[in-house]
Image 1 (spheres, rainbow, N blue to C red):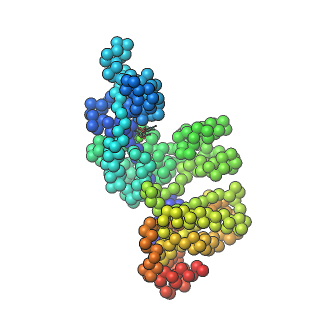
Image 2 (cartoon, rainbow, N blue to C red):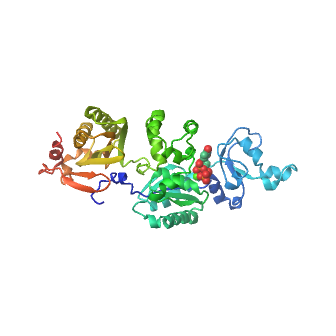
Image 3 (cartoon, helix red, strand yellow):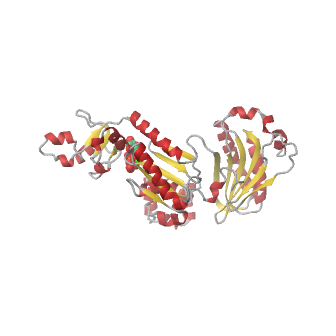
Length: 417
Ligand code: TTP
Ligand code: CA
């Protein structure tokens, strides 16, 4: 493991990912500063005061959800299903026991609670990706093991409950999309661990609407084809899905099978930039393959330039039938922003796959640095480890690329020319 480049281990499927999502977040925040609201039906939203007509529900406590109130509902509809306590107290036609509390949205306060939660999450993970005010992915591979993952998640939940006072649901799984479904599976106060060997069985009954990337239109089309669950999708004809939905069809198929090799990257600060693309049919056409890879490499290098990212590693991914993933990467003696070098290195790395039938190719730059000052000091690169790391998921070995007696960056780079 030690010899592997950061970002390359992703293809081995050995990751442990947690997804944490606070229960009825805005409502939980309101209960923090007004404990009398605990256990009561509570709606947080806008537009419920007398004279107001327009407005929507931001969230509802689970007690209020029992009355049919939900996020994004028109406030007028929420009031019909769950009248305000204060109205029910004076209106003989209403029942106070079937009424609830309404509170306005106070983003500033929720942000401060969110900040407290984030601090605890960061203490439990190598990498945290915050996706919204109350939701984050954590890469916890180095922090726990599958046998201990349940206790580990319980520990995070307890700290959030004790130190912040809100309730988190947590899912742990080998990848992001499964972890998200797991955190949602036993809400509220949920805790679900899906071990790698359990992923397929866990996902099987999940309705397609709950899969990442399936919107209402896609869902309707899939249901018309008799595909209603993740298992239906996982056992569907992959080629037919690609014909119908293009590249997205392949992604849906993979997700339904629990295959998702996205890395948990810190918010706004990716560990790598990559892009990949599948051929409609696996091909051995060298020209077609190289052209595709070079287009991807140029796109990736352009993205790096745009984000002021320097990279120390350039790599490719090659997928051969049936679904064998090969990654090859070359580390540079120092951080660069050099599109021409990316092109040369990926072309070079592709050499090894000449004549192979290839399903998919990808280009990646990794080991990113966002300090643009670093690039100016070529001389400071002495001693950089110019080695080639080869990781195909089963083993990693470091080979010397040779020809670098002079360890300065300039000399090492010139070997690619
Ligand atoms: P969610 O996580 O979708 O919902 P939730 O936390 O209220 O409930 P749960 O996760 O237990 O199902 O959204 C987080 C917050 O974002 C939510 O508390 C309020 C806000 N929000 C809106 O303002 N409008 C919306 O339509 C949604 C879905 C959420
Ligand atoms: Ca939530």
